[in-house]
Image 1 (cartoon, rainbow, N blue to C red):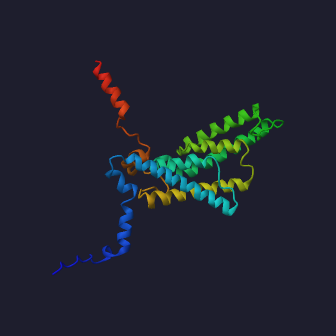
Image 2 (cartoon, rainbow, N blue to C red):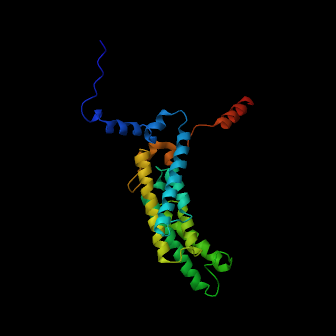
Image 3 (tube, rainbow, N blue to C red):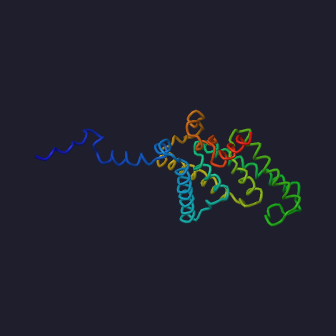
Length: 240
């Protein structure tokens, strides 16, 4: 007489939807990283896939809507969002305030440059002059000070200040397009990091206590020595 087949557990745990969700949850970074011998390999794959997919979605949205949504500072912002998503530099508050500070710094520097050097070309990227040097230097300095003052350190925002100071964002359409692209990118990071990665990516402000548990994903250096560091240490101690 054949043995009876095991019965499925009663309740939601016995449904196919629960099993499907349980299967995909085991592919999330939050589940995989503590259980792998080489978790950095999974992180590299995650950065490649999610970063490429985010920029592809942003590019497709720009193509479909015919609206300016692609700007150079978004590339390094995407890298930070997917390489160190739990760091303070990747928090939505940090990115929004930093890029706003970059925009403001670039326009202030550009306005002052036009007032001080009215006879020189100040928005032609191909012309190097006293005006362009002063404007770019001032934009860089103002954006850095603003990020320090607002406590929103996000290095790609200095590039935002520079493209404004160089005259690439020369209309309100470009400014609105840039802001929409930043918000769009943060939304994609929220979906990818929380849903696909299973990480507690913040809704707005960075939480240092939560981030401390995620090591390199929070920008905390890995203290383990690599092969060459270990070899050098052994050679050094052997020579003593």
